[in-house]
Structure formats: C-alpha cells, structure tokens
Amino acid sequence: MADIKEYRKNIRDLLEEIHGYDISNSDSGIEGQIIFDTEHDHYLLIDVGWEQKKHVYGAIIHIDIKDEKIWIQRNNTEINLADRLVEMGVPKNHIVIGFQSSFTRQFSGYAVG
Image (cartoon, rainbow, N blue to C red; front, side):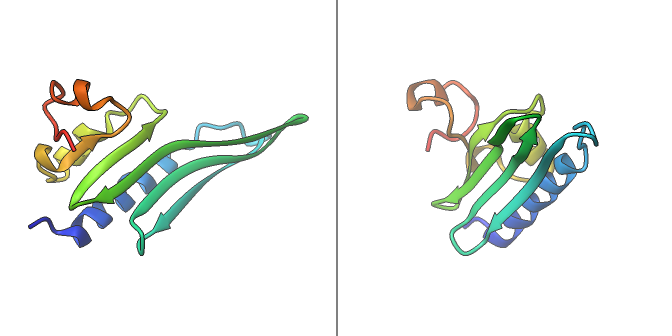
C-alpha cells in the first residue's frame, strides 16, 4: 500500500522547489502560486496576474493523487517531474503521466493508470 502522506510531502517539496526558481521579471505583475488541496489530493503551481494589459492565468504544474498513484496531469516546465519523484523514492509503478494517452503510457516505463 502506498504511503499517501509521503506522496503528499514529496509533491509539496517538489512544487515548493520549482516555485523557488521564480524566473519571472520582478516588474511583471504575474505571481506564481502554489495550491495544495490535501482533502481531495489536487496540487497546482499556477501563474496569475497581469502582463501589461493582458490578464495571465494558467496551470504550470497540476498533480493529483488518485487510487494511491501520483498522476502528473500537466507539466509546462522543462523539469522531468516523474524522474524527480523517482529520485524522492516514489516507485515508477506509482506514477502516471496523465497528460499522455493511455495507449502512449504503456511505453513510458511508468504506470498506465
């Protein structure tokens, strides 16, 4: 049985680390926000704010825990989140690359779903 509390900690640590890389221009009105919903196991890193006259809102990273597995739903970074989770001790068969089709997942080396 997966240790869901440990998975929550791994996800929190990973998102806080990536949030710390904040490469946005300090003059920009865009803020990176981390959202932790530990009751429903949804975790996000989003950008929100204004860039000149344009409103910016978007998910940079979205991770869920479903059926004792970590589902990477979105990754708009160059960081391989699955590899980082494995480095943190999460078994590959407990990580699902959710933004890939179920057909493609079977070739990923990670869980299918």
